[in-house]
Length: 365
Image 1: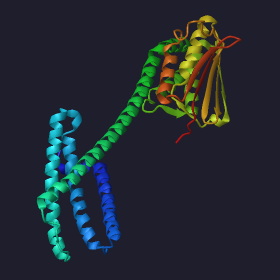
Image 2 (image 1 turned 60 degrees about the vertical axis):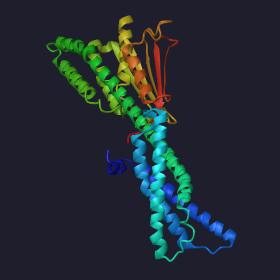
Image 3 (image 1 turned 180 degrees about the vertical axis):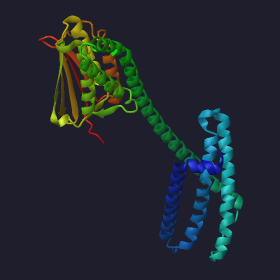
Image 4 (image 1 turned 30 degrees about the vertical axis):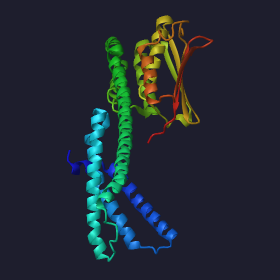
Protein backbone atom coordinates (compact mmCIF):
# COMPACT_ATOMS: atom_id res chain seq x y z
CA UNK A 1 0.00 0.00 0.00
CA UNK A 2 1.50 3.36 -1.04
CA UNK A 3 1.72 6.32 1.36
CA UNK A 4 -0.88 8.26 -0.68
CA UNK A 5 -3.31 5.36 -0.58
CA UNK A 6 -2.67 4.94 3.13
CA UNK A 7 -3.57 8.59 3.80
CA UNK A 8 -6.79 8.22 1.80
CA UNK A 9 -7.79 5.08 3.69
CA UNK A 10 -6.83 6.36 7.15
CA UNK A 11 -8.04 9.95 7.24
CA UNK A 12 -9.19 9.63 10.85
CA UNK A 13 -5.72 8.78 12.17
CA UNK A 14 -4.08 11.59 10.23
CA UNK A 15 -6.75 14.10 11.23
CA UNK A 16 -6.43 13.29 14.94
CA UNK A 17 -2.67 13.71 14.76
CA UNK A 18 -3.08 17.03 12.93
CA UNK A 19 -5.45 18.29 15.62
CA UNK A 20 -2.96 17.30 18.33
CA UNK A 21 -0.20 19.12 16.44
CA UNK A 22 -2.23 22.31 16.11
CA UNK A 23 -3.09 22.14 19.81
CA UNK A 24 0.57 21.74 20.77
CA UNK A 25 1.44 24.65 18.46
CA UNK A 26 -0.74 27.07 20.41
CA UNK A 27 0.31 25.59 23.76
CA UNK A 28 4.00 26.14 22.94
CA UNK A 29 3.34 29.69 21.82
CA UNK A 30 1.51 30.31 25.06
CA UNK A 31 4.51 28.98 27.01
CA UNK A 32 6.92 31.27 25.13
CA UNK A 33 4.71 34.29 25.75
CA UNK A 34 4.43 33.44 29.45
CA UNK A 35 8.22 33.06 29.75
CA UNK A 36 8.89 36.44 28.12
CA UNK A 37 6.27 38.16 30.21
CA UNK A 38 7.79 36.63 33.37
CA UNK A 39 11.28 37.86 32.33
CA UNK A 40 10.00 41.30 31.31
CA UNK A 41 11.02 40.73 27.70
CA UNK A 42 8.90 42.25 24.89
CA UNK A 43 6.60 39.78 23.16
CA UNK A 44 7.98 38.78 19.73
CA UNK A 45 4.99 37.45 17.82
CA UNK A 46 6.82 36.91 14.50
CA UNK A 47 9.61 34.99 16.18
CA UNK A 48 7.15 32.79 18.05
CA UNK A 49 5.14 31.92 14.96
CA UNK A 50 8.22 31.20 12.83
CA UNK A 51 9.84 29.02 15.48
CA UNK A 52 6.76 27.05 16.47
CA UNK A 53 5.23 27.18 12.99
CA UNK A 54 8.21 25.53 11.32
CA UNK A 55 8.46 22.86 14.00
CA UNK A 56 4.72 22.15 13.94
CA UNK A 57 4.46 22.15 10.13
CA UNK A 58 7.32 19.69 9.72
CA UNK A 59 5.89 17.53 12.47
CA UNK A 60 2.48 17.48 10.84
CA UNK A 61 3.95 16.63 7.45
CA UNK A 62 5.75 13.67 9.01
CA UNK A 63 2.62 12.19 10.61
CA UNK A 64 1.42 10.16 7.58
CA UNK A 65 4.90 8.72 7.06
CA UNK A 66 5.21 7.67 10.72
CA UNK A 67 1.73 6.17 10.73
CA UNK A 68 2.56 4.31 7.56
CA UNK A 69 5.70 2.93 9.23
CA UNK A 70 3.72 1.93 12.36
CA UNK A 71 1.26 0.10 10.15
CA UNK A 72 4.00 -1.79 8.28
CA UNK A 73 5.89 -2.77 11.44
CA UNK A 74 3.42 -3.30 14.32
CA UNK A 75 4.80 -4.63 17.59
CA UNK A 76 2.18 -7.36 17.96
CA UNK A 77 3.15 -9.14 14.72
CA UNK A 78 6.94 -9.25 15.14
CA UNK A 79 9.58 -10.28 17.75
CA UNK A 80 9.65 -7.59 20.41
CA UNK A 81 13.39 -6.88 20.78
CA UNK A 82 14.27 -6.61 17.04
CA UNK A 83 11.13 -4.53 16.48
CA UNK A 84 12.01 -2.23 19.40
CA UNK A 85 15.52 -1.71 18.01
CA UNK A 86 14.00 -0.96 14.60
CA UNK A 87 11.64 1.64 16.09
CA UNK A 88 14.44 3.25 18.11
CA UNK A 89 16.60 3.45 15.00
CA UNK A 90 13.78 4.98 12.97
CA UNK A 91 13.08 7.47 15.80
CA UNK A 92 16.75 8.56 15.69
CA UNK A 93 16.62 9.01 11.91
CA UNK A 94 13.29 10.83 12.31
CA UNK A 95 14.84 13.21 14.87
CA UNK A 96 17.85 13.87 12.65
CA UNK A 97 15.76 14.65 9.56
CA UNK A 98 13.21 16.64 11.56
CA UNK A 99 15.82 18.88 13.22
CA UNK A 100 17.78 19.39 9.98
CA UNK A 101 14.69 20.47 8.03
CA UNK A 102 13.44 22.62 10.91
CA UNK A 103 16.64 24.62 11.30
CA UNK A 104 17.25 24.65 7.56
CA UNK A 105 13.84 26.29 7.03
CA UNK A 106 14.29 28.83 9.82
CA UNK A 107 17.44 30.40 8.39
CA UNK A 108 15.79 31.97 5.30
CA UNK A 109 12.71 32.91 7.36
CA UNK A 110 14.83 34.69 9.99
CA UNK A 111 16.58 36.55 7.21
CA UNK A 112 13.28 37.42 5.50
CA UNK A 113 11.78 38.92 8.67
CA UNK A 114 15.03 40.47 9.97
CA UNK A 115 15.19 38.27 13.03
CA UNK A 116 18.73 37.94 14.41
CA UNK A 117 19.92 34.38 14.50
CA UNK A 118 21.86 34.98 17.69
CA UNK A 119 22.99 31.85 19.46
CA UNK A 120 20.23 29.64 18.18
CA UNK A 121 22.50 27.92 15.65
CA UNK A 122 25.70 27.72 17.67
CA UNK A 123 26.65 24.28 18.91
CA UNK A 124 24.35 22.63 16.38
CA UNK A 125 25.42 19.13 17.40
CA UNK A 126 24.20 19.91 20.91
CA UNK A 127 20.97 21.25 19.44
CA UNK A 128 20.50 17.98 17.57
CA UNK A 129 20.80 16.06 20.83
CA UNK A 130 18.43 18.41 22.67
CA UNK A 131 15.84 18.35 19.90
CA UNK A 132 16.04 14.57 19.67
CA UNK A 133 14.55 14.19 23.12
CA UNK A 134 11.56 16.21 21.87
CA UNK A 135 11.31 14.18 18.66
CA UNK A 136 11.68 10.94 20.64
CA UNK A 137 8.65 11.94 22.73
CA UNK A 138 6.76 13.00 19.60
CA UNK A 139 7.59 9.70 17.87
CA UNK A 140 6.18 7.58 20.71
CA UNK A 141 3.23 9.90 21.29
CA UNK A 142 2.25 9.42 17.66
CA UNK A 143 2.71 5.67 18.07
CA UNK A 144 0.29 5.69 21.02
CA UNK A 145 -2.23 7.77 19.03
CA UNK A 146 -1.92 5.38 16.09
CA UNK A 147 -2.35 2.36 18.37
CA UNK A 148 -5.41 3.80 20.14
CA UNK A 149 -7.10 4.67 16.85
CA UNK A 150 -6.24 1.25 15.46
CA UNK A 151 -7.77 -0.47 18.52
CA UNK A 152 -10.85 1.72 18.26
CA UNK A 153 -11.25 0.82 14.58
CA UNK A 154 -10.83 -2.88 15.34
CA UNK A 155 -13.51 -2.69 18.03
CA UNK A 156 -15.89 -0.90 15.65
CA UNK A 157 -15.21 -3.43 12.89
CA UNK A 158 -15.73 -6.32 15.32
CA UNK A 159 -18.99 -4.76 16.50
CA UNK A 160 -20.16 -4.44 12.89
CA UNK A 161 -19.12 -8.02 12.17
CA UNK A 162 -20.87 -9.24 15.31
CA UNK A 163 -24.05 -7.39 14.35
CA UNK A 164 -23.86 -8.84 10.83
CA UNK A 165 -23.30 -12.31 12.27
CA UNK A 166 -26.32 -11.91 14.53
CA UNK A 167 -28.37 -10.83 11.52
CA UNK A 168 -27.20 -13.85 9.54
CA UNK A 169 -27.96 -16.16 12.45
CA UNK A 170 -31.48 -14.79 12.76
CA UNK A 171 -31.91 -15.08 9.00
CA UNK A 172 -30.54 -18.64 8.95
CA UNK A 173 -32.88 -19.66 11.77
CA UNK A 174 -35.82 -18.13 9.91
CA UNK A 175 -34.77 -19.95 6.75
CA UNK A 176 -34.48 -23.19 8.72
CA UNK A 177 -38.00 -22.65 10.03
CA UNK A 178 -39.20 -21.95 6.48
CA UNK A 179 -37.61 -25.13 5.20
CA UNK A 180 -39.15 -27.11 8.07
CA UNK A 181 -42.60 -25.75 7.20
CA UNK A 182 -42.53 -27.08 3.68
CA UNK A 183 -42.54 -30.84 4.36
CA UNK A 184 -44.14 -30.57 7.79
CA UNK A 185 -47.72 -30.08 6.70
CA UNK A 186 -47.54 -29.45 2.96
CA UNK A 187 -48.30 -33.02 1.95
CA UNK A 188 -50.97 -33.43 4.60
CA UNK A 189 -52.65 -30.31 3.26
CA UNK A 190 -52.42 -31.65 -0.29
CA UNK A 191 -54.07 -34.86 0.88
CA UNK A 192 -56.85 -32.82 2.46
CA UNK A 193 -57.32 -30.85 -0.76
CA UNK A 194 -57.35 -34.12 -2.73
CA UNK A 195 -60.13 -35.49 -0.54
CA UNK A 196 -62.20 -32.30 -0.92
CA UNK A 197 -61.68 -31.48 -4.57
CA UNK A 198 -64.59 -33.63 -5.85
CA UNK A 199 -67.11 -33.42 -3.00
CA UNK A 200 -66.40 -29.84 -1.85
CA UNK A 201 -64.59 -28.08 -4.71
CA UNK A 202 -65.28 -24.59 -3.31
CA UNK A 203 -63.65 -25.49 -0.01
CA UNK A 204 -60.75 -27.17 -1.80
CA UNK A 205 -60.26 -24.04 -3.92
CA UNK A 206 -60.30 -21.86 -0.80
CA UNK A 207 -57.75 -24.10 0.87
CA UNK A 208 -55.48 -23.91 -2.18
CA UNK A 209 -55.70 -20.10 -2.03
CA UNK A 210 -54.75 -20.04 1.66
CA UNK A 211 -51.91 -22.47 1.05
CA UNK A 212 -50.54 -20.42 -1.85
CA UNK A 213 -50.80 -17.11 0.03
CA UNK A 214 -49.18 -18.60 3.11
CA UNK A 215 -46.16 -20.08 1.34
CA UNK A 216 -45.78 -17.05 -0.90
CA UNK A 217 -45.43 -14.86 2.18
CA UNK A 218 -43.25 -17.28 4.12
CA UNK A 219 -40.80 -17.77 1.27
CA UNK A 220 -40.36 -14.04 0.55
CA UNK A 221 -39.51 -12.70 4.02
CA UNK A 222 -35.97 -14.02 4.41
CA UNK A 223 -34.40 -10.57 3.94
CA UNK A 224 -35.92 -9.09 7.09
CA UNK A 225 -36.43 -10.21 10.67
CA UNK A 226 -39.46 -8.07 11.63
CA UNK A 227 -42.73 -7.07 10.02
CA UNK A 228 -45.93 -5.29 11.17
CA UNK A 229 -48.06 -7.26 13.57
CA UNK A 230 -51.07 -7.11 11.22
CA UNK A 231 -49.02 -9.08 8.67
CA UNK A 232 -48.00 -11.58 11.33
CA UNK A 233 -51.65 -12.04 12.32
CA UNK A 234 -52.68 -12.42 8.67
CA UNK A 235 -49.93 -15.01 8.15
CA UNK A 236 -51.04 -16.90 11.27
CA UNK A 237 -54.70 -16.75 10.15
CA UNK A 238 -53.75 -18.25 6.80
CA UNK A 239 -51.94 -21.06 8.58
CA UNK A 240 -54.97 -21.63 10.82
CA UNK A 241 -57.29 -21.62 7.80
CA UNK A 242 -55.17 -24.34 6.22
CA UNK A 243 -55.22 -26.41 9.39
CA UNK A 244 -59.00 -25.92 9.76
CA UNK A 245 -59.32 -27.48 6.33
CA UNK A 246 -57.99 -30.65 7.95
CA UNK A 247 -59.52 -30.46 11.42
CA UNK A 248 -62.63 -28.37 10.68
CA UNK A 249 -64.62 -27.48 13.81
CA UNK A 250 -62.23 -29.37 16.06
CA UNK A 251 -59.83 -26.43 15.73
CA UNK A 252 -60.57 -22.94 17.01
CA UNK A 253 -58.11 -20.08 17.48
CA UNK A 254 -59.20 -16.67 18.78
CA UNK A 255 -57.30 -13.39 18.66
CA UNK A 256 -57.36 -10.58 21.21
CA UNK A 257 -55.25 -7.59 20.11
CA UNK A 258 -54.94 -4.40 22.14
CA UNK A 259 -55.50 -1.25 20.06
CA UNK A 260 -52.22 0.20 21.37
CA UNK A 261 -50.36 -2.84 20.01
CA UNK A 262 -51.73 -2.72 16.46
CA UNK A 263 -48.77 -0.66 15.16
CA UNK A 264 -46.10 -2.92 16.64
CA UNK A 265 -43.38 -4.73 14.73
CA UNK A 266 -42.95 -8.38 15.56
CA UNK A 267 -40.57 -11.20 14.53
CA UNK A 268 -41.73 -13.04 11.45
CA UNK A 269 -43.32 -16.44 12.07
CA UNK A 270 -43.56 -15.80 15.79
CA UNK A 271 -47.03 -17.26 16.36
CA UNK A 272 -47.13 -20.03 13.76
CA UNK A 273 -44.80 -22.39 15.68
CA UNK A 274 -46.72 -21.68 18.90
CA UNK A 275 -50.08 -22.45 17.27
CA UNK A 276 -48.59 -25.49 15.61
CA UNK A 277 -47.40 -26.72 19.01
CA UNK A 278 -50.90 -26.26 20.48
CA UNK A 279 -52.55 -28.06 17.56
CA UNK A 280 -50.07 -30.92 17.61
CA UNK A 281 -50.55 -31.80 21.29
CA UNK A 282 -54.26 -30.89 21.41
CA UNK A 283 -55.18 -33.12 18.49
CA UNK A 284 -52.94 -35.92 19.75
CA UNK A 285 -54.55 -36.08 23.20
CA UNK A 286 -58.09 -34.71 22.76
CA UNK A 287 -58.67 -34.59 19.02
CA UNK A 288 -59.61 -30.94 19.53
CA UNK A 289 -57.74 -27.70 20.05
CA UNK A 290 -58.93 -24.32 21.29
CA UNK A 291 -56.21 -21.68 21.45
CA UNK A 292 -56.19 -17.94 22.19
CA UNK A 293 -53.59 -15.42 21.04
CA UNK A 294 -53.57 -12.14 22.98
CA UNK A 295 -51.29 -9.16 22.29
CA UNK A 296 -51.04 -6.09 24.51
CA UNK A 297 -48.70 -3.14 24.88
CA UNK A 298 -47.33 -2.25 28.31
CA UNK A 299 -45.15 0.88 28.39
CA UNK A 300 -42.31 0.15 25.95
CA UNK A 301 -42.88 -3.60 25.78
CA UNK A 302 -45.11 -5.88 23.73
CA UNK A 303 -46.70 -8.74 25.67
CA UNK A 304 -47.82 -11.77 23.67
CA UNK A 305 -49.62 -14.76 25.14
CA UNK A 306 -50.66 -18.03 23.51
CA UNK A 307 -52.94 -20.28 25.57
CA UNK A 308 -54.46 -23.65 24.69
CA UNK A 309 -56.62 -26.32 26.30
CA UNK A 310 -54.27 -29.19 25.57
CA UNK A 311 -52.47 -31.52 27.98
CA UNK A 312 -49.79 -29.00 28.94
CA UNK A 313 -46.24 -30.08 29.68
CA UNK A 314 -45.67 -33.19 31.74
CA UNK A 315 -43.77 -32.61 34.96
CA UNK A 316 -40.04 -33.03 34.46
CA UNK A 317 -40.39 -32.96 30.66
CA UNK A 318 -39.39 -29.33 30.13
CA UNK A 319 -37.54 -28.49 27.93
CA UNK A 320 -37.35 -31.96 26.37
CA UNK A 321 -41.01 -31.83 25.37
CA UNK A 322 -40.54 -28.58 23.48
CA UNK A 323 -40.49 -29.04 19.75
CA UNK A 324 -38.11 -27.55 17.23
CA UNK A 325 -40.52 -24.68 16.57
CA UNK A 326 -40.50 -23.48 20.20
CA UNK A 327 -36.72 -23.77 20.42
CA UNK A 328 -36.41 -21.77 17.20
CA UNK A 329 -38.67 -19.02 18.54
CA UNK A 330 -36.63 -18.81 21.76
CA UNK A 331 -33.36 -18.71 19.82
CA UNK A 332 -34.57 -16.01 17.43
CA UNK A 333 -35.83 -13.85 20.30
CA UNK A 334 -32.43 -14.17 21.97
CA UNK A 335 -30.72 -13.06 18.75
CA UNK A 336 -33.09 -10.17 18.14
CA UNK A 337 -33.46 -8.96 21.74
CA UNK A 338 -30.52 -10.16 23.86
CA UNK A 339 -31.28 -9.51 27.54
CA UNK A 340 -34.39 -7.56 26.50
CA UNK A 341 -36.98 -10.29 26.21
CA UNK A 342 -38.76 -12.90 28.29
CA UNK A 343 -40.02 -16.31 27.19
CA UNK A 344 -41.91 -18.41 29.71
CA UNK A 345 -44.43 -21.23 29.64
CA UNK A 346 -46.43 -22.91 32.37
CA UNK A 347 -49.39 -25.24 32.77
CA UNK A 348 -52.70 -23.54 33.54
CA UNK A 349 -54.70 -24.60 36.58
CA UNK A 350 -57.73 -25.42 34.48
CA UNK A 351 -55.60 -27.41 32.06
CA UNK A 352 -53.64 -26.48 29.00
CA UNK A 353 -50.45 -24.57 28.33
CA UNK A 354 -49.74 -20.84 28.51
CA UNK A 355 -46.77 -19.37 26.62
CA UNK A 356 -45.85 -15.76 27.40
CA UNK A 357 -43.43 -13.65 25.38
CA UNK A 358 -42.29 -10.11 26.14
CA UNK A 359 -39.96 -8.01 24.00
CA UNK A 360 -39.35 -4.31 23.20
CA UNK A 361 -42.11 -2.47 21.36
CA UNK A 362 -41.09 -1.14 17.95
CA UNK A 363 -43.29 0.94 15.68
CA UNK A 364 -42.87 0.73 11.87
CA UNK A 365 -40.20 3.05 10.46
